[in-house]
Amino acid sequence: MGIRAVPVVELDFTDCEIPADRLLGGKTGIGFKQAMMTLDRARPGVAAQGVGLAQGAMEYASIYANRRRQFGQPIGSFQMIQGMLADMSARVEAARYLVYAAARNIDDNASNVSKLAAEAKLFATDTAMQVTTDAVQIFGGYGFMKDYPIEKYMRDAKITQIYEGTNQVQRMVISRAVLKEARELDGLGDYIPVEVQKNVDPAEVS
Image (cartoon, rainbow, N blue to C red; front, side, top):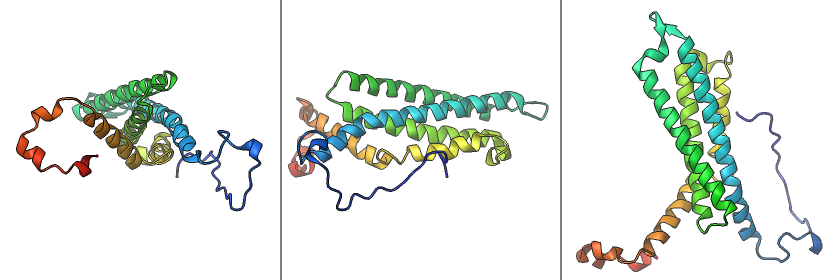
């Protein structure tokens, strides 16, 4: 469908023995932790890919909106097109700064790396899919054809929502972090009615 120039293969490690001196991390039993740490650092990279796709699609659609004429005027003069471009621009900028924040947290070895990496990946790649879809819409029928490369932007954007953990997984990571942060907020319970607190099962929020 997309990223057709990328070679994708399946690796089979059945009965594959690894010499002790080739063991990542230096000891057994920490593979899952190592994998999670790798994902925390890879997800902002995928998010950056999403930002690039969205930026490119937005720029291409903006140029087209200035040049394509209907009813004697550029389609960029129509409010519906302007509204789409405005939303595209706002989403791209927001995604870009979220990616920067996630990268900075990794460099600083911050405590909330997992949460922010997941947020960057989720928002930037959803933005890529939305912006490229809107760009195709601005191109109209041409957007669905290979005469222009805008359809490729849309095809390439989809995979960013899938690899390095699907965006459904990112939502799980984020929500767990948010709930954990809430449990650490002192005095929050003072603002929750007593009758509500009595009906809360501690096991459900632990």
